[in-house]
Image (cartoon, rainbow, N blue to C red; front, top):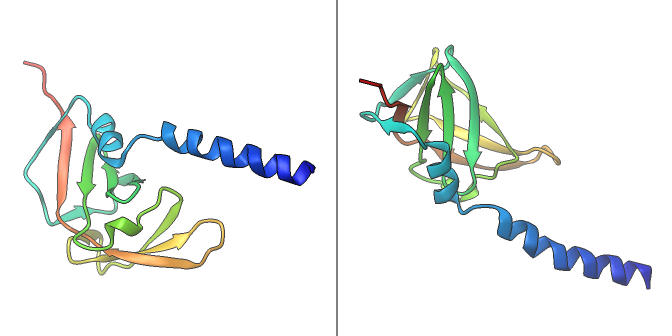
Length: 129
């Protein structure tokens, strides 16, 4: 009986938790508030990269200094999950639009797929006049 009640409680709360998470487009818009897009580039420097964040099913956002670079993969974006570990092999010190990124499940450590990167769109703070 206790198991049944516990399963019912989990089933009822899971949709509520999922409903609180914003849609991928909204998550990205919130992240980019107060920033302006620049001209897309093919590569970014990995040596200056501070962090990366995954927008589920949408994009990978790399922080390089005070600038954000949004990469919406050419293929495989639907596989992106916020808890994935990104594994990137590059030749040299740059991450480029021709590179692929393997996705590893954080809890099981099993491969989940990969994405083929697209161009990187830089976003910077709007300069005051």
